[in-house]
Amino acid sequence: MNQEQPSKHVEDTIKELNAQEAVIHPQTSSPNAHSNAVANQKEPVGVQGIKEIESSPLGSRTDQPGEITIGEALEATALTAGHRPVDYSDAAAIQAAEVRATGRTNIVPGGVAAAAQSAATRNARLPRDEDKTKLGEILSDASSKLPSDKPVTRRDAEGVIGAELRNDPNLCTRPGGVAASIAAAARLNQTNASNNIQNKTN
Image 1 (cartoon, rainbow, N blue to C red):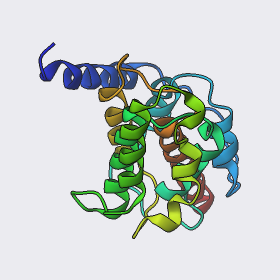
Image 2 (image 1 turned 30 degrees about the horizontal axis):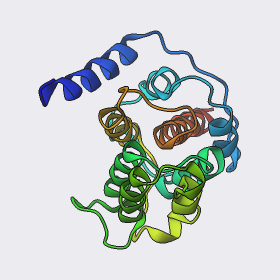
Image 3 (image 1 turned 180 degrees about the vertical axis):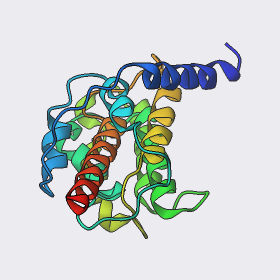
Image 4 (image 1 turned 45 degrees about the horizontal axis):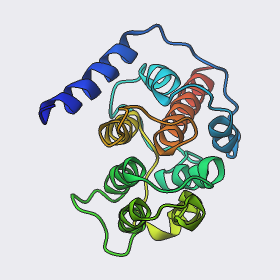
C-alpha cells in the first residue's frame, strides 16, 4: 500500500457520503443537546455526520451564541467513549481538532493533543486494557486545556473525520468517538444556525 492510498480512500469516502441523500433529523436547540446527540450516535460518523451538515456553504456562518465549540465536543467524547483506551486514530483526531481550534499549524506543548499522542504511544506498549490511559482522562477538561477555542464547522468535522480514518487500521471511525462528536456538534451548530435564520425572517 503506497502513501496515497489512505488519502485517496478518505477523499472517496467523503465524496461518497456527500453524494448520498441527506437525512435531516430534527434537533433541539438546547445548549446541552450535543451530549444527547453524541450519546445516541449509532451509525459510523460518516453516515450521519457529513451528509447532515453538507447543506451550508463553507464559511457562510457567523458565530452564534450557544454554538458548540471544539473543546465542548471533545468533552462530549469523554462522556460517550471515555472508557476506551486512547489509540493512534484517537490521537490523530484530537490533534486535528486542536489545530482547528487554535488556528496553529502545530500542536500545543502540554496540550490535549500532546497528551493524547503520549497516551497512544504508551498504550501501544501495554498488554492489558485496564493499565492503559483512557479517552476520558485526556478529554475530560479539553476546553480548559485549549489555549483558544471556536465553534465547530463542517470543515472542522471533515478534517477530524479524515484524520481518524487515515490513522485507523480498518480505515473507519467509531460511533461515539472523537470524529463522531465533532460531526454531531457541527450538525447541531448548522441546525441551530438555520433555525436562527428562519426565526429572523419570520
